[in-house]
Image 1 (tube, rainbow, N blue to C red):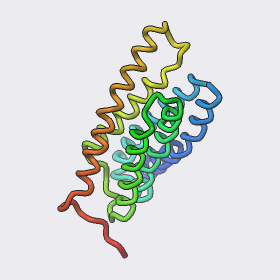
Image 2 (image 1 turned 180 degrees about the vertical axis):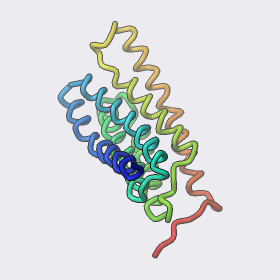
Image 3 (image 1 turned 60 degrees about the horizontal axis):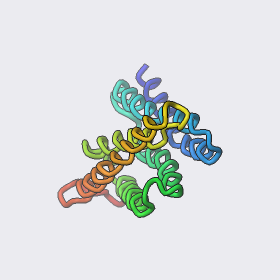
Image 4 (image 1 turned 180 degrees about the horizontal axis):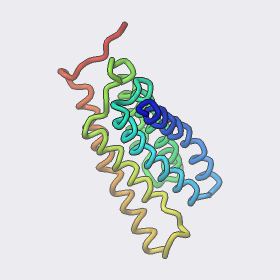
Length: 182
């Protein structure tokens, strides 16, 4: 039974890793409801795969390494789209994506995959929430409500960026176990 939980956790991680492309295609095609739904499902899959891995007594080494990369692949799609539409400043999206690549590279070489810190997990939840609000479909309510939700998403993006930078310092500061090169 435990291996079944681990297998499903890994499948959800793979779903999240590939969901960024259809999400981006939906945004380009102006299918806001589909894009929003894909982002929500992917966010739920992030929580579920962690729960399933814990239920299995721990995730696979492969899943532990793919999980943070899957988050980055998924979140890059709406971030890039929002930057190209000048909803978010390009420099802020670049800074966030640069941080993500730096930490992913560092984690790749860590023996344990360098599990996410408390700050890193908070950052991911805040990013998902921010993006869900920023991408709120224009047909899902009266214009003042939609503008308020999107503005709240914009304001939540900034603490998510600060948490991303703060957690990066935590990963990279001396004293944290360093990756071992073989």
